[in-house]
Amino acid sequence: MRNVSSVLGKLAKTMSISLMLLFAVTMAHAQDIKEGQTLFKSKCTTCHAVSKKVVGPALAGMSERHPEEWLVSWIHNSQAMIAAGDETAVRLFEENNKLVMTSFTDLSEDQIKNIIAYVKDEEAKAAAGPAEGTAGGAGAAESEGANTLMILGLVAVVVLAIAIIVVLNRVIRSLEKIIATNQAAIEAAEAANTGYQESRFSKFAKAFVKNKKLVGFTVLLFVVLLSFAGWNTLWNVGVHQGYEPVQPIKFSHQIHAGANQIDCQYCHGGAFKSKNASIPSANVCMNCHNTVTASDHYDGEISPEIAKIYNAVDFDPETRTYGDNTSPIEWVRVHNLPDFAYFNHSQHVVVAGVECQTCHGPVETMEEIYQYSPLTMKWCVECHKATEVDSDNAYYDQLIQAHEKLKKGEKMTAAMIGGLECGKCHY
Image (cartoon, rainbow, N blue to C red; front, side, top):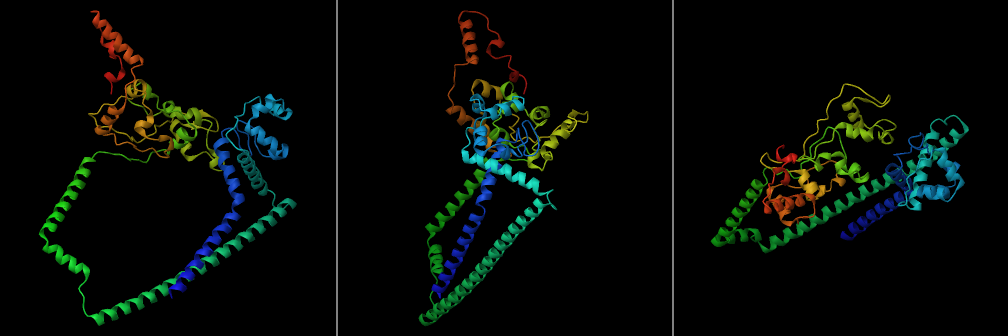
């Protein structure tokens, strides 16, 4: 019986692997277009769209206008082609008001071809809609019907395979139950023949209770574990490591600081000159988002999150004008030190040269910002013990000059030792 169960199980696994291979072959071409879509959105959407002009011209029909080899060279390094005197490259550069196109030397030839394939696929989708009723529309309808038939056939094969696997699994479970029942009957018969036998657990329990030293040690161990758990719980009261509140706008640090490599202090300018890093005002967001609307991800519509910024500053993207009905964005504070703790961003960023990631963690990988470090006193003290002081900066030069004046008997003012820093008086 066990051999039959094993054979049926192997058959089910074999059918599952065959289905996976069938899907892999069917979706191979789609994966190339998918990679092209991902690369297009990360590299090209800032300046181009398929069917409309953005900063650069619309890309629809580029494969008909230029050979694929030429397009690969142009996307890889357009300025090199212009410098080499390529007539088509020079003409295209002049027709677009001599706007310099970014060179993508980091992309391979296959990756660029995948981008071109994605653009072709988008052209085909756009052309298939209005072509219904024409000769071209009939050809597309036939192709779509064939594809639909293939998909239906594939779905039928998958459903049939799943049904077979389910039936085989049920047969396997039934056989296992029969085997278990027979085994239990055999064990019961053996126990009846040998008479009653005390279980191992019962013997261990009786021996354990009689051994007073072992009982005492167990109780002591239990008390120690409870004390440790209680101490650990009390020690972490007020520690908000991992705190990730829901924000009014789903701002992605992964996209801004990671993919687009925007410097932290472009938005948090206060970190360089004051105690607080400061939350950027909406007008800082509008420096980019007055043109960047992420419409390619939302079927030509403005991103709902960017629309919230427009509502806050009362900006009309159609007329590109601002109104008077503004409202602040109510961000939720993530990092919050106790009132008795004083931390100055400028002193750490400017004087010590501490990177933002030292305290805030890898924000360039965070989709939603959260508190990465515990921010406890022990954590700060350990950092101060390990961090070496770089005395080669203006702050310590100022202190040295002040001490030289004291040695000479000259007067020293509070301003000479940092008394004019904003953080000395203002929290």
